[in-house]
Length: 495
Image 1 (tube, rainbow, N blue to C red):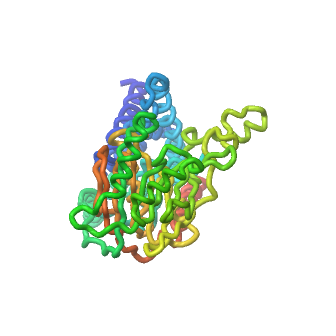
Image 2: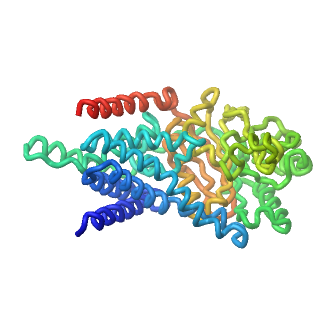
């Protein structure tokens, strides 16, 4: 076989390994296969003599991983397929190929720094934190996301998502290290590999979390995105939510102390919704309601959530601050307006404007709550940025944009990560599902199935003590990362 043919074969193997690795994420939830795919990629990396060859392996592995794991990205374009379906493959391939450059750089720089495997642990982890922060970040599909169902996922409470990603890459590297002939070394390495394999398949299970005396009702209308703003369907979805709000508790459960509606739960902007808000409060029968709504302030629009009083008055307001680029606003749109291009300026109502940042909502007897609207639950730093520790987390989301399976379930996995990291329960309400109560260990204590309409009365779990990650954030990870990168570069200089 010619060298060129061998190189292309290695590249194809890297893409295939990435596609297999994506089986570690929802809806498959097989972290062992993610580990296998990463082991194959690292093995291919070891056989690369030059940095550009290693970069090609890293790009191919990432592209296969993202392409399989992010097929749901085409779903928003299928809401109005006659106009936008043609864009879907370009958006998917462009997104996957562009973000794969982070891993390509990690593989290439690692091979430049050393002919060994261990520097890749640190360079790939560095690429992941850059992917999560640069250009507002897109940390969707991190290796640590696959661990929420198994014991290692509880490590999120100690070292967070990036720390657990570093541990995951290190675990994969253990399987690439040759077994030395010395019996003690061989025995220790084989034992470590066995521990890693068991950790990937043993589900997390302990005694159920303690619960408070409070109950939260989650209202899931199941409004498909293509129908959500249809004038004919608006009334049906609205009345469906009213009926769920006023319904008596099922199975003699306790009456709810709080009712949650999903993101953009009503079609009217807040300044035109007084009648609807009064009607919602009337159906709630004196129970506070927290719901998503669009808000106007002059020419600016906000993706917001409001807490209603007994007569439908707005007691508190939260404006989403971490917006989706190109989905909720156009980057640099306000800057372009200064040069006469006004079509993309959020300040002129062409897209959403960003709120001031994480804000706590006073829920009375339930305590202070930190609201997260949709995409904000993807970012651990948004939760850690709260002005003080809340009693629980709330996520209001419209996952109808993400399709009917893969996307919503991956979004749910990230919500579970945030609960584990903070040691806090999360009440999650989603338009099409999955609406769920999540305990501080990331387990679903009760849930409504995806793509179904209904409501759920769930007991609010007790919070745990503040976790190490909630206290120190990414700093321990960054210290370890900088030491590892420094050692790799120092050895490069000596070489």
